[in-house]
Length: 242
Length: 288
Image 1 (cartoon, chains in turn cyan, red):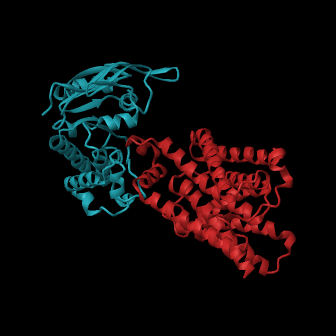
Image 2 (cartoon, each protein chain N blue to C red):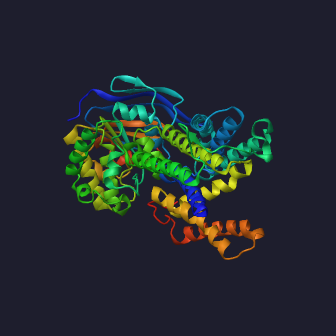
Image 3 (cartoon, rainbow over the protein chains, first blue to last red):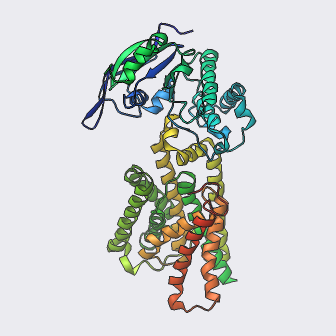
């Protein structure tokens, strides 16, 4: 169950790409144990926000606090602190086995036995990976590759998992399976999860809260039921909230 | 027998070069055209230190290794800042600069005249002047090189560098400092190229800048591509085929005046055929 305590706190975040300001003083919070959706039309700055928090883009102003500590984000530091990021598309290592793909997510640990134990836990959690463990990753279907990315992101047992449009390129049935797995991850490991997603219907029954980002600013936030109200969504996607 | 031993030594030296470049290009995806530069640094370090400063072989090799490591590490900053095609071009630019340093710093390198009279290696009083002994020494070094790279590439470190080759961004997203890994790989590759250079200098007893220009870098890269990206055995096979192929031409009775040109045309043809027919090379696991 989600708690009131914040795991990630982003305050007054600005991001510039050259002279263009793409995020304008964004305040954003992820609470411990919750599944949070980040919505908004294309170009709103959702991916930029998450990539900046993870350190893939440089912020021009603002503060990122993770698990009670203010951090200047970079991927090495954020993974070490307990944040995992799965970008858009099939983020796998195609010419490597599924086992090696998983190991790539855990090499900040030096303990080989610990890595093996974690792989064992995850292949039990995602049985499809167990069946194909020694196979090269490019031989997997799209849905399986997405599951592999998800499993790899969980290798370090993160406190926060960020998924940027995990349903892209997947058939509706597979999307449903992937989202169910995401909900199971949240329940089984207590992982806080942020999902950037357009496919709101599939997420309504698993998400707790959400933010709507429009033109680089937070336009709305609140319980997912409130945000998924059809009139609100109309306003978002037809530009009335801008 | 002398002739066969001569070829065996050349194949073995190029195997060391190809394995070290495969570590850089095949395993990590850094398609560098500057490998012959580090090969040259090792060769010049041994040649200058043994002929002009009274060094014996082993310390001169060590100085060559350190020098190659320092230069490779510094060069890795501009080279590895870029990716793919741009990286290839910058590494090419770096090799042009270094070739011109070797050619024009005549006080040190004697420029186009080259350095003559480089003595055969002598280790603990044992001279490796005779070809069988020299071959044994180079062969032993190649075996050590093979097992060194084999161990590294099968380790967690090896899996991470292959990850960089496959997808830099995802590797970074998994918390790995991509540039730091790439720099260390580039530097270690250069160290082994320098060792091969020291052997070449003492084997030929003469070196000149032409031995370390762009063409040898391209030849080593073709060996890696032909043998197979990310395959150490493939690198040895690539060196074997591309060193022996021109020797076959010699037996076909081609006039010596056109031998070098035909040889280079064959290297080009081999590259084209491999890319069309077997892009992962003969024993490789990864398509370029």
